[in-house]
Length: 237
Image (cartoon, rainbow, N blue to C red; front, side):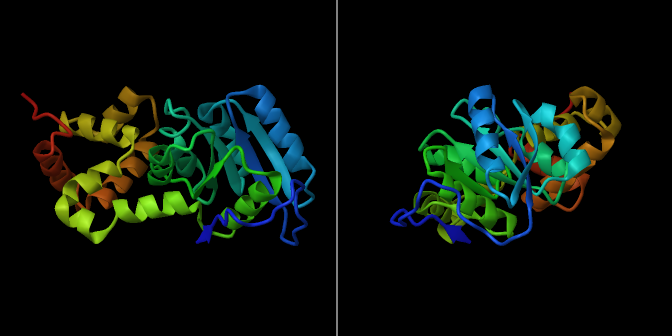
């Protein structure tokens, strides 16, 4: 795991790296920030920007087609970006997400990690730190500052899990996964869930696979029992 060393003496320029070209997609709702970010990345010979978008849904067709190495996704306190983060993994499993945060809110950072981000970087960090974070995440490691790391360790400590193990499992669910559970609880089949949520059957299958893993249930019946017990779904009348 790569951890941010806040005492590092870093320069504002992008560092020289010897790795292969890293293909990147940038997602931020602010066009000016996005344009500046792309120009910054284009200055680095080992980075290649293959796409730039204002929202996650707009980016998904290109991500599915190009399979970029890294997605730089801006997140904010109003939830923008975070809840659609799992959709990126659905269309390109090998693509890793580095969340760019404009807030010091540790709960926001933890939420991004729970939703599948491989790292979180504050937008006020210098360009050299951004480059290191991209390289770290591309190498298969996590990029977290000390405060976020400590917070995550407390959240997932054995003591916390022992106090309320089922709530810990539930906390790992995304909003989309909760929607899938609620519809499954009403007795809807995969095709019906897909039609209701305007997603594909394959996406529903991926969501259910993730749900089974997070909740540690073996099949749909166990899922429904767990959901009714924990009020994630209502018993059909």
